[in-house]
Image (cartoon, rainbow, N blue to C red; front, side, top):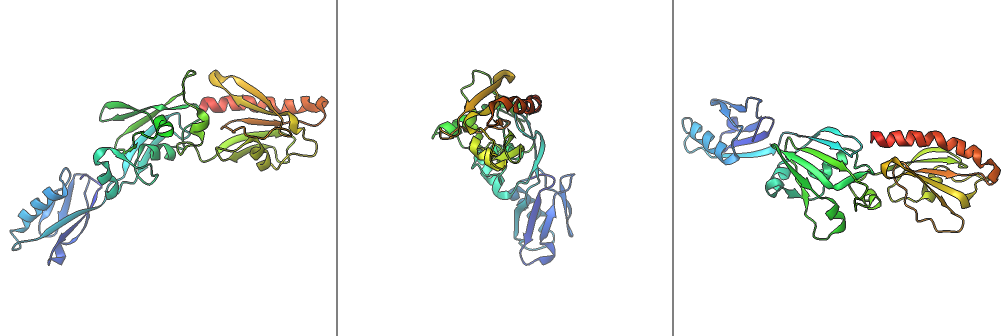
Length: 298
């Protein structure tokens, strides 16, 4: 136990000694007729013995029961390839700490797990390498591979966190086997991805779509194509490795749309008259510069 933990002390048949206490910053609790007692660093059993010994001077055969009703919030930090890096404060319950005995736990956003901390940080970015996650605890750094959790049935369970842990998610190298499309549909990714739809749609601009959405879905959220749209020459513009801009032409009139949208993609819907496409292209150039800067920030 430590400062900030909330404990309940019951002394049977002695109501004035029964109550809930929060361990003070100096590690002590104050009880009626006993005074200050050092609680930080004790277990419930050891504190039980200390109080029983002190109460023997006041009561005959005191029966003491101590339980932890709420642990102090955990303070951790998440940095690297996540949307919202920075410090976090995670509520820690008695159930959570009991599950922390073996260092692992279920992937539950309500528990202080590694994956929950990543989700609280907005999820991983598209250039993240979830096979190289560094966890620093008490000065010791260990590498954790969450990619196995997506690709292997025998992957290790999610890791429980402890107060003071620091997490760093590395960026993906150009030769990495990590598939960003699979990561984008995992629970580690943001719940929505940002896509810019420009050209012949009814409501051009940035839209939010689910991670497994297609180009057609993004166009639909942008109001759908106008009557002048040339759907057989829709272009998908994406920022690739080493900040290279990749452009792909897709025929949405003839082919089934199974192209998965990724965070930061730009969808261009040109006009039906090819001579006017240069006007649409003029609308695309500025967003690409913004897109490049956006990825550098993320």
